[in-house]
Amino acid sequence: MFSLFWAVQIFAAKLGFIAGASVLPFQIMLILVAALTLMVLLWRNTHVALGDMFRNQPALFWKLFLANGIQSGLGTFLSIIGIALTATINAGFLVKMATVTTILFAWLLLDEKLSLRKSVVMVFMLLGAYLLTTKGQSLLPHIGDLFILGACVSWSLGNVLVRKTLRTQAVSADVVTMQKPLASIPVFGGLISTVVFFPKLLGTSGPVLECCPFSASSFPYALVSGVLLALTWIYLYRTLSVSTASYMTLMSMMTPIMVSVLAMAFLEEKLVTIQLLGAGLILLSGAVIYFSDVANV
Image (tube, rainbow, N blue to C red; front, top):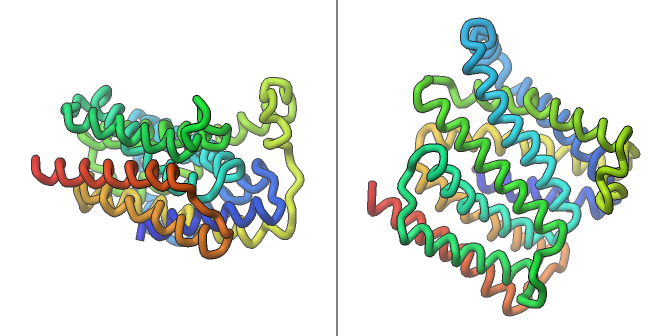
C-alpha cells in the first residue's frame, strides 16, 4: 500500500503542475490537506500519547520533531519542486536513490556495517541515476532531478534519526506520523518568509517559488495528492514497525514501476535506450540490496 500511495501521489502532483499550479501554493495546500487527513484518521488514537510525550518527555518529542521536520518538511518541499521541474518517470525512479542515502546515513549515524557489496551496489545505483537523468550527455542532472536527489537525502536523514531515537524509546508509529505536518510548519514558514522578504536569495529558482497565486484548476490535484501523502506517511512507519528494512526496500521498488506505467499511459512520457539502462541499474541494485540483506538476517 505504501508504494501504491506514493506512486499515485507523485503522479497526482505532476498533473497539478501540468494544470498550472505554482509550486509553493500547491505545497501549502498539499500539507494542509495531509494534516487534515491525519487529524481525521489518527487524532483520536494519538492525541493523548502525543500530549503526554510533549509534557513528560520533551527531549524525545523535540528529537522526533527535528527528524520529522527534515523528513516530511524539507523532504516534501524538495521533492515537490523536483516533480514540478522534471519528467514524472525521472521522479519515480530517482526517489529510489533514498536507498543509497539511507545506507550512508545508517553507516554514519547507526554504526551499521557498510559492506563491499553495498558499496558496489551504491556505485551502480548512482551510475543508473546519472544515465537516467542526463542520458549520458552532460556532467550534471537537470535542476529538477537535483531537487529530487536532495529530497532523498532529507528523507533518509530524517528516517535514520527517527530510527536512532526509537532504538531506546518505544513510541507508536502513528504518534510519530502525527507529528509530521506539525514539524513541516517551520520549514514552510521559513520558505515563505524567504520568498516574500528575500527573493534574491533564491536566484534562478525565484520564479518557480513565486508566492502565492493558487490556480483553482489545480485544487483537485492538491486535494488528492495531500490525502495520498498522508496515507504514504501512515503506511511508511506502520510498515517499518512490523517488517524488516529489506522487505521495505523490495516493496518500494514497485513505486518507480507504477509511476512509469502511469506516466507512459496518460502523459505519453518515454525513455530512450540509455535511460532504460539507467532505470534497470537502479531496480537491479535495489533487488541486490534486498537479497543480500535477507541472506544476512
